Length: 138
Image (cartoon, rainbow, N blue to C red; front, side, top):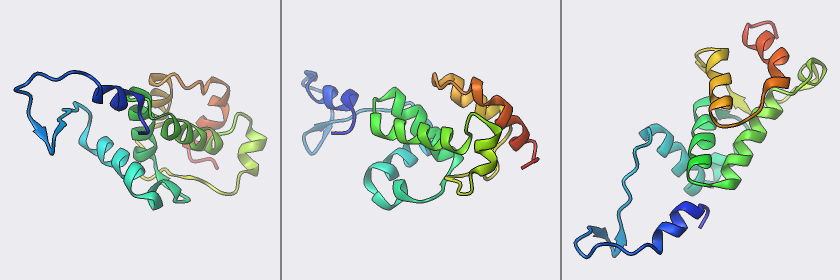
């Protein structure tokens, strides 16, 4: 329902010997199980996606799998959290008082930049606010 990829997959003819569960074809995913767990939480646990703070790995999972499987709403909302948390100007960053991402044990600024660039999210104009923040200068 939320993914054109999975919705279209339902209509593909299956070989007669293809295993099913309750008559539904089985789709094997090669994604990180933790990413799939975050995706399923966002889809089936309404309180998860509505939480004020989401963990950075969860945001990353929604960006990666949202893009890969065309979960447009989940992808767009995760990108919105990321770009709201890291606004394009230092003034907007300093004015931001409510965070929406639990940065937890984020590895480094480079991981954040890799997440964005690997998923075609332009944060180039945001770099001058990301770098001081991630260096602990906030």
